[in-house]
Image (cartoon, rainbow, N blue to C red; front, side):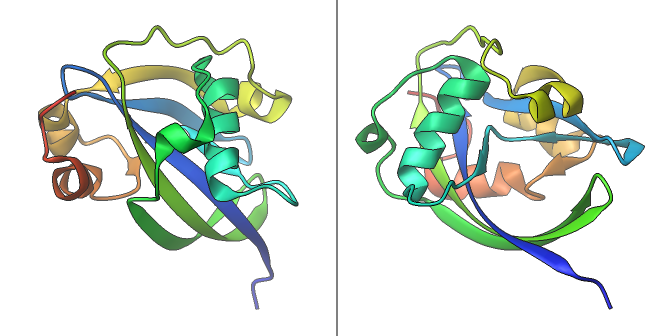
Length: 155
């Protein structure tokens, strides 16, 4: 029987004026061949709200500092199970949507875990994301963005 670590997370669907979405290129240190793209965000700390965690993670991972209310309410929730670095996680996560005109990502705030598992970032046009053979999370991200933010349109 697999033993899961329960975790809450807050993630940000960051869109630019051109309608692209920011994703990080990651790998699992326990399975270096397992490469994937994922949205900014991470674990909710004890005593922290989801929206505060999303704003904190956004600042740490991208350098973009915003007040939590700017994120509004979550636009989507999911439950997921996954292995990472030899451990299994059961994660409840909320996604917030934020549109920016443009943003030059600054990863100086990465934690040691992020430095070990993140290899880069890219602003993805949704059309490219929809047809890529590369793995990304959450699965179905282009359709999710179409539902919550009108697809390709930017700010």
